[in-house]
Image 1 (spheres, rainbow, N blue to C red):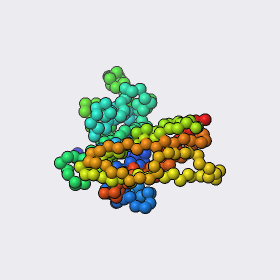
Image 2 (image 1 turned 135 degrees about the vertical axis):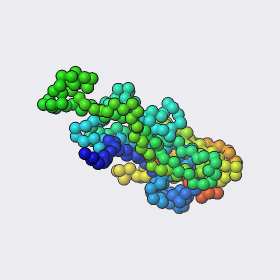
Image 3 (image 1 turned 90 degrees about the horizontal axis):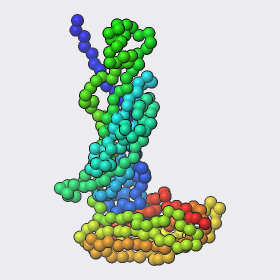
Image 4 (image 1 turned 90 degrees about the vertical axis):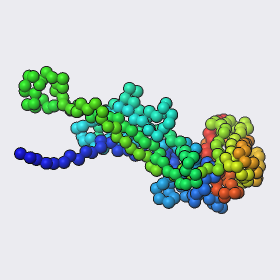
Length: 315
């Protein structure tokens, strides 16, 4: 008797990817993209919403990501063990392993609806041979090593009626199949377009909890990564936003130039510092800094996009 049929294999897990800090970038480093044009409004469209689904990153930027493994294809009576989760695109071996079963976490066995969320970061690097061409890379290649959990046989099963099978190595369970090299499940993160960055920008110093009446300093560092001289327009928005009570009294006093134009030599590095003093305690919103490039007409720093500019001032 000849019989034919087919088996549809369903992956026991699905992967959901998201950016940890969201798509808005306060330090775009002068990338030349439609979402980063230094127009009058410092509130451009988020970088991930322009031209479809592609994400944007500057060359050398470290993009924080989150991957959630969700058990959807197991069914109510089945479970699987996650042995190891790695990010194959990570070059640092110490940061490549995201999860291991010997870490004694609670996620040794997953059932229908279980979720394992893992955080990692990807370094967006352009290849030297690519030149000025657009280059894309996945924000993570997540490899999941797993195995199905043994299934218990019902008590009235007749499969173990023979005493010879009742005393074998499987006892009262069956499965999983004894496969020496079970293929891992591979999930690819969203595609990201890596753009050439003429500048490098970062926040050097910002106190977590300053005190009332005590001056504190916030510093930024900008590096010209090109062989050309550059002009930058530095602007600190000192407009005080009223609190929930409607008070217009200044809560944060600042010193330094609120707006200036500076020149940068090729490959030069500059540090911008501003000194503040809070007049009240509590949750205070600090003014945003914007730095734009005169040559490229793009934002190098645009803190107007930040949602975490709050300072918690101690009494």
